[in-house]
Amino acid sequence: MLSTAELEQQMMAKIEAGQRIEAVDEMTDDYREQLTNLMLMQADSELAGCYGYMPWIQKAPTIEEKFAVSNIVRDEMRHALAMYNLLERVGVDIEAHIKQHDYNSRGAEATDNIGEKRLGEDKRVNIFYYPIDTWYDFIMFNFCMDRGAGHQLEDVRQCSYGPWAREIEKIFKEEMMHVAHGNYWVKKLAENPETKPELQQALDKWYIRTMNIFGRAGSRRNAIYRRYRLKVRDNDAVRQAFHEEVLGLTSQWGLTLPEWQPAQ
Image 1 (tube, rainbow, N blue to C red):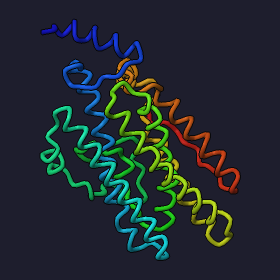
Image 2 (image 1 turned 45 degrees about the horizontal axis):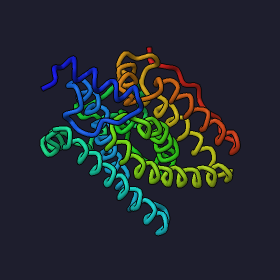
Image 3 (image 1 turned 180 degrees about the vertical axis):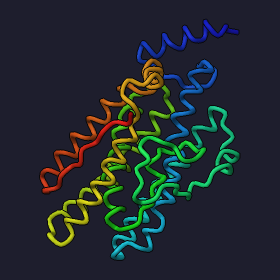
Image 4 (image 1 turned 90 degrees about the vertical axis):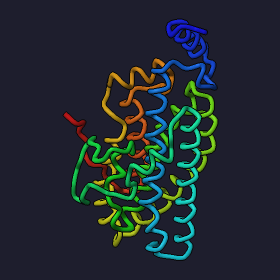
C-alpha cells in the first residue's frame, strides 16, 4: 500500500503529464476534498437554479416560451442529477446532503447586493439566493448567469478528473443552448424602445451579480485548484473573459454595462 507521500507523488506525476484521475484510489485526501467542494458547488447550483426557473414555466408570456423554459428546467435538473451521481462516486451521501438544505429558499431581497456572501449552508453559487421576479429578470439571469457558468465550465472541460470532464461535455452543449435563448430575448427586447429601459435595469442588476460569482482574484484556494488542474485559470481571468463577451454583445444592442467593483 502506498504511503500518503507516495500517492501524492504518483497522482501529481499523472496530472503534470496531462493524464486524468479516474478513481478514488488514485486521489489523495486533499485532492478529493477540493474536487468534492467544486462538484458540490456545481450540483447545488444546478438544483437551486432549476427551482428558481420552475415558476417561469407558468409565468412565461407565450406557450412557445413555456415550452422553452420547461426544457431549460429539465436540463438543469438533469445536470444536477449527473453531478450528484458523480459525487456519490467520491463518497458523498447525496440523499443526506440534499435533505439538509432548502434549495428553493431565496435569502436576498430583489434590491440587495450581497456581493460574494453565502446566505445558507448549501454550496450554491450565491447568485441563486436572489429572487427572479419579472420576465426581464428571468431573461437577464439566463443571459448573464448561464453565460458565466459556461465560462467556468470551460476550465472543467480541461480538468484532471476524467468522469467530471466527460460529463461536462454533455452539460456544456446544453448550457450553450440556454445562452442562445438568452441572446435571442435580450436582442429582441433591446431593439424595442418600449422594453429597452426595463431590460437595461435588469442588466444593471444581473451583470453585477454575475461578476461576483467568479471569486476573488489571486485566491489561495484557486491556486490549489490550479495545482491539481481542477481549474486552469485564475478567477479574474475567467471573469474578464465573461466581461469581454458580454460587453461585445450589449454594445451591439445599445445597452450599457454598469461598473463592477471587486469586494473589499
